[in-house]
Amino acid sequence: MKRALQITLGIMTAIGGFIDAGAIATSAGAGAVFGLGLVWAMILATLEVMLLVEMSGRLAAVSGKTYAASVRERFGFKFFLLPLSAELIADSMLLAADLGGMAIAIALVGGWNWHYIVPLCALFIFAIVWRAPFSVAENGPSLLGLVTLSFVVAIFVLGGPSIDVTRTLWRPAVQKHELADYLFLVAAILGAVISPYLLFFYSSGAREDRWSRRSLGMNKVTAIFGMGFGSVTAIALMVVAAIVLQPHNIQGITLSEVGLTLTHAFGKTGAYLYALALFTTCLGAALEIVLSIGYDISQGFGWEWSEEKRPVDAPRFNLVMMLFLFVGLAIALTGMDPLQLALFGSAFTALILPISLSPLLVLMNDREYLRDDVNSRVQNLAFVGVLSIAFIVAVVSLPLLILSGG
Amino acid sequence: MTLALLLVVLVTGCDYAQTPFVRSAGEIGSTLAASALTIEYAHTGKMPEQYASASLLIYREKLASSAPSLGSLGGAPGQPSLDRLMALLEQARTAVAHPCLGSDCDWQAQVATIRQASGAFVQASQ
Image (cartoon, rainbow over the protein chains, first blue to last red):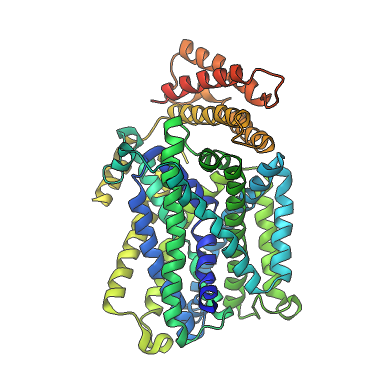
């Protein structure tokens, strides 16, 4: 039981970093327009993120230092500001998107206008971050997040994909004028899944949970099962979108459209399941982003930090989170479509991926940090592969965003 | 392989991308199709009324943001086709703005109106 609970860090990381408003948008959009033609991109992203998460956890467990603190220490403060600034821009958009997603989920249940609910969602995040210990922020969304398995069950209830839809798995049906859209979705999936804040959060979470060298086995299991859980959910969402939305020519361009998938499968219960799944995933992501920014800045500047400490014992850590939450709220209150914000955030994340990931490769080969647990040759080769993809995605994400009309 | 494909798309640009009109028409068609399905589900017991009502508010917003500039977008069809589309859209938008979710109105007529407009926009986007 204790071990099962320990995996919740992985599931929480996956709920927040893997399945957020951005991933819901890209997965459902991909399934609705291209059937199963982008499942390969999700599988590739999953393998990459498993690798990266395992490494950031190993770094924290063996060295006793988080990824952000190690980057600051190893590369100096000026270099540290580079990924930090990029993170602040990308994460503020993603936080606003997730606040919007939470508000839409509540609005769907009550029949209200979601714009009025956004401040309440920010207040809810504030209350958790301010008062709750890390275990509550970690376990709450993880356990509630299991509701996202409804998408998997829905596939069976709906009788699975047709032969034509299944064929798109290995032969994507992409028309010539859709090619830019298809490739943009590839970049968006990679950008939405491999979010750098996920690595910063996970390594800080490992310290919050007091992981040591003895936790390395648990780290592997957590990385594989946590990210695997996120991946299964995201792929299931693609499949149900292909089954339900595609035949109706619904592209999944709003979060309420995506909800039609579960409503189609389970009726009224499905409507409530979707609202709960949307609320939980966006709550997990918003918490993870706010905590991640608090961790990054506090660790980089050498301030006291920990969600376990009372605000009075780590005042600057808590102040940074509150200020960032306020920025996210201000963006969300402009009324911009959460999915548009999430797509911009994911595209920007894709743009900064090489800057955020490169230091990890150096750190994972530094015996001062990892001692005997440095990367093997195979792990380094795999990492170089991930970095190469990150570079390609970074170069093409903005032109594709423009070509595909955002 | 993927890199080569990406380069081809970036160099040749617009040949491999939808025109702004085609994109907007597809999105409007999609939003209208979702609106029709939502009203249908609300009346066939698949969706709670409040849920449908909140969803339709979102669809109404989406239509309001994508429809006004339609005629000025690159790749727009000639004026007669555009006028026909706009007329269909206007009827459908009225239905989405005042959806029939109770039992005292003709929801099937609303769904038919919205689906007709949706079909026209989907066709215009292909």
